[in-house]
Figure 1: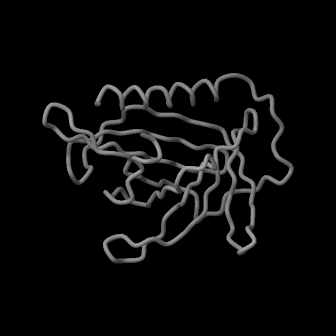
Figure 2 (figure 1 turned 90 degrees about the vertical axis):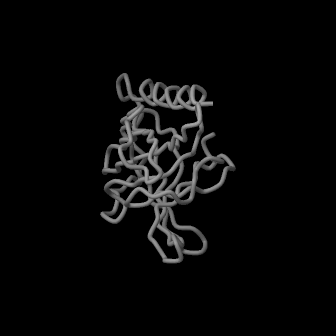
Length: 166
């Protein structure tokens, strides 16, 4: 299972690399906006737990968002508290954002690759309970019919993404 997960991470990293490499041929969407400060910065998520040779490994995801770039890092740790994570793959993608408002007045930001304007999904801020306390989270919907996943400002083992990626 450990090799399978590592292979998936490498496949995602190589896809992102080839999506970024090359000249920028697409035009930016007409209503692109700057990302608000509340969205910018680093967000962390807990992906999945895997056991190999009686050792548990915890996979993590780090997303750094700026106005024009998204940097992702996939890490692995053998510590329960997710400390000392080793980076397995890193990707950088040039992006643009488009502000959308739903019928229920929920503001979200659709993210598109700068190169060809392929949609990477949409983000919005929400509040979820973590250990009984309301916590601000970045919700992400890739719009492929999967569940919405959450990322937090600090790394913690909650709201696992295992149904989303693996």
